[in-house]
Image (cartoon, rainbow, N blue to C red; front, side, top):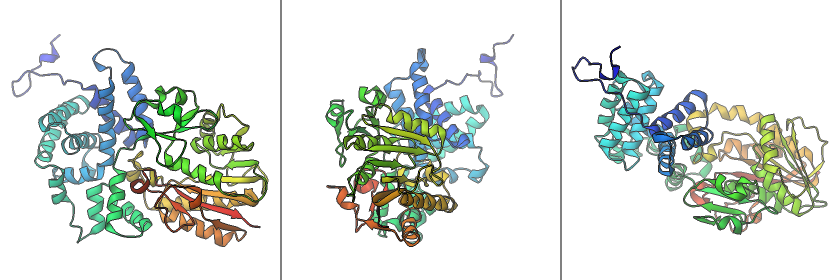
Length: 475
């Protein structure tokens, strides 16, 4: 049998087996999962990294390997729109005619060339070698040719060539320069209320790597305990928040591993704190989280309720997500219950609860720092799909609270169609409710606008773009 590793090629040169780079192969596998299965990188990447750390031999990952793989995946996803524009200028066919796996490899190479400090020759050679491993020699030649064109300019040079001037088309200019779909740029701009500086700051913030933020669940852990960890600093606004400034593995922290603390964006914490802090007329004994999955807000609410002798009911429609809620609440110091139920057709009686939180399903465009792929996955028509459910859930929440009780309507989206438009419609349809000013219940948090509702922003508050409106039922 012949030795295929020495099989001659048409050039007469000896055949060389491609050298497998475990870091770049893993990054490619993660991007393919996001593309093929509509997976989210923050769910796909951790198990891939964990498996790589458990391997023995040259494919075993260390901390630097994990950091590079993470940067390659998230950086490529964040800047996909910009890199598509650059790659399109370097190929002789429409991008839709480039096979998706080939485009993923090209995007990985473009990110190394334009978005990292990896030397040009190393970025090109490593990506071409990856192409040989995952695509074959023929398509690796195409990758090599395209990346050599990409390498002719830096990112600023390419933006001058592929982004239309701001004066000619402001939205398309911002879409290319900041790697957001045009319709998302337009919708975010409307939510901000105009002005170039604000939208540029927001789009830039969407492309920054977010810090890992922890929550110390009251009665089970303290912020001081978490602050004893390396590179841990206090949160900006929540008394229960601690930020890990150098990343790290939250699961290695005892309080997180034991469920006494969790990973939770500070904006999410503030929503729960504002609902818990709003004044009530009458008893304060029964709380409801009507859309509780995956359980972060429910766990904080349950702990706050326990401090007051109140009980939380956490309801989640999807059974598997209800299981995640139960896991998050396990060990809560006070009584609670988790059920799988449809929030639009609830099993509880109207007027049962004193406080209700309804964090409705939405486009998730407020969390683009952590889920960059959502910007490419969502379409304008998705807003029409979510609208009836958001209104139905808010109506049920208002019906579920007693007269004098408080309802919090929250979304992880700043789009007006998912925030103020929903609130305005329900106020017309439900005359027995009034808006109350949410701003006093987030003491110390600046730039909360004119109220009475609250919109948090990544560029102003360092949080996800969470929205909150507080209602009091009056009749």
